[in-house]
Image 1 (cartoon, rainbow, N blue to C red):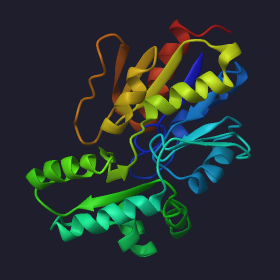
Image 2 (cartoon, rainbow, N blue to C red; image 1 turned 180 degrees about the vertical axis):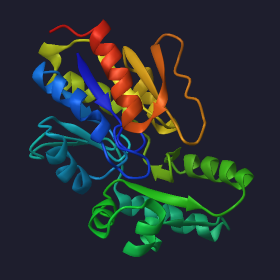
Image 3 (cartoon, one colour; image 1 turned 90 degrees about the vertical axis):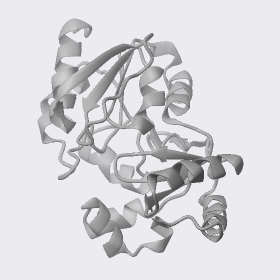
Length: 254
């Protein structure tokens, strides 16, 4: 088995960023030598510390599928576009009258306020290479127009738990496929993917077992019908632990 997981709102609590409820299951996965792959909107700088905290030595995906890093970060496969191109497009979007605030407009304290991260964590979150999170400050109708305008520029908008992410035309599903093909060709078991937001759907739909973690937004994720889908009753790491315990009991082999 291979486990691929989102972080915020999934393995990490949406408010506290704690993963304490999932610790026993992570330990059991490690005992069974089942790899846990992080596939997240977070940056490489953020994952450097998180990999260590979670006890993981596996390759990982950053910034919503924009790049795949080896466990030691000595190798990187880029699927997205450089952030400088995104900021140029967003500058043009402002000229068109769209109203939003991006990370490039924010101070460390602004990011702390929007995310609840510590200052050090916020600085790591701001070290973006391939995406630009924005807080939408216009109407919902204008957001739909904005998404089409961005698409015409060869880019895309992806809604996450807190932000709209402006990025290249890549996704967590494509990155997950490429990571597994490159690193786990000879050890390919069923893939379990876990996520809580719309930006996780591409990943969930490429898995053998899709775990939809209950979201505080109350939006119920509905992966393609061809996927075995599990919806949790609990939020965040409680839901993560609940689902993975059931899966290990049913599918896992000691």
